[in-house]
Length: 239
Image (cartoon, rainbow, N blue to C red; front, top):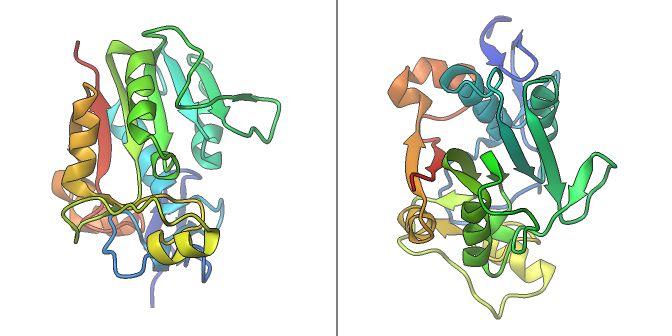
């Protein structure tokens, strides 16, 4: 039987006995083998942080100076627990945006047509957005444009490791068909790993993969409710 300190959530800083599985039907990945998809350990039982939120906060606190540096951050469709963490950092110039904001603190932002000037932000966080956008190349170019030279970001998407090319079909338009094809009614594609990296590189980003199991240990990965195959896609704007 697992004891209380078997797992750890970096979002709420609690040691817990178990994570909670994703609800049935939340995402149906069909035959795709996905990175960063942990259905049995998806959610923290205390703060409800998703597996990807735990990965992001771990990376930000362990591998960057984000929580201490005086930098500007653009966070697209902010995840609740990541936003809560960054909101505590008075050093940040922190801007949250979404196409359809649900609160007065989030700005109305179209990621394919950002109204910010070139090189406005040191850090850009855009997670699980690009798979919803038909012209993802336009969105990537905008994210690259508003990032400062020397800046970095997290660009995460649902990503399959068992396909060579991203799967997308413009004939798939209804919510029901999109759920069957891509696993979620709002998605318009499932990315292939190498193809996704190439798309990011094509607009100018340098892509770095961060893997906790490779840098630390499989045990550390499992402690966070993650898998050894889970990668974080870090982008850099070098020039």
